[in-house]
Image (tube, rainbow, N blue to C red; front, side):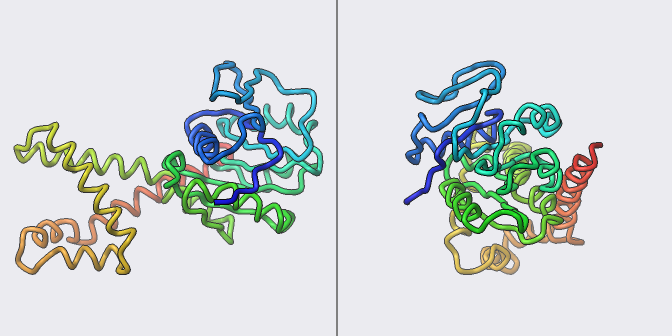
Length: 270
């Protein structure tokens, strides 16, 4: 994999998500000397990566900024950071509920901006990152940033920013929902009498193997499910419970809608 690394990468914040992204990039060959992390705590991030507790006086030419702090901090960050940003700076934002128009208002000198929403498996190179850029962002910047994201897993460009909260609800929040499902599957097995530790191991391995199988299959997961569920068999009886009145679909639709609505409320400052 040939990656066009940015001349310099400046991370504002390095929490769970930004930390996973950086760890993967370093594993893929990013020179830590090209990275600076702004972290008020001053805690080390990785060998060779510079950590600063305050904003520098200037940013190196060709810097790509990753906004990885909490969304509510954007006003304070922009006040300090915007004066350092010239036209050669690029911004990648992973701030939930923060549209490109808001970023442009806060960083008026920056032309190239990409809004990104990764999920936690990016640290393994198996994540999903949704990407959006408006018409002001250059084709070259989109290509470079897309190339930077590719080592993290699946990169999906979204044509309509209005769908960003929906996409975030699905892939950005999705790992947490799947973790909850794995836990519930294990606890259900325990409720039927399987020892808790065995149920936990078996539930996790079942989901892991089934996901790998689905990723490799030419058929959709829905078709695969029906193939496993023989008429009159145990699987079909269980599937009848999940499928009754579309209860599983309704539950997941409500779950994603709640996450989407929260993203929209965050964009309004609520």
